[in-house]
Image (cartoon, rainbow, N blue to C red):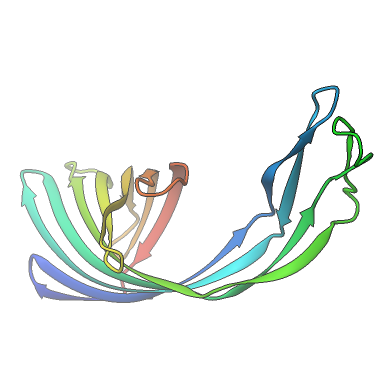
Length: 212
């Protein structure tokens, strides 16, 4: 849900709310090497974190300034985003090896994969963050064409931890004007998670917007 207001011909303000529900898949976590037998087979303990759903509330407030040079329209958007992630109960199974012969240091190790050594539920605490999102967008207005190519770059800065360049997002695509009030878009997105160990994101997106 998003509401916008045109302050000046070149300046727009908006506020909005987004509800996000995401699914976290089952994950296997290696916990460390237990030992090596006489055949040089390595044995590792591990945990299985079961899949769970995560729920988030996101609130946004933005200012967007726009200008045009020739047939290229530019806009800069400054957005403050507050996000609250709800607590979640996650179930974990622990699998631990034991030596077939405790008196033999080269003994093989046994693991019952049908029955976990231990099972427990962990409450992931609720968390929140505040982020400044600075985005520059360029759109090329082609004469007598309903398709508008665009490209953008967006910088994320964590305000609650003051972490500059937390991540950076690039998009390139095109918009198609169906009529005066309806528009669809198709784009490619690349996100560099600069400040974390998470892998980069590649995605194809489809959007639809309409004016009331």
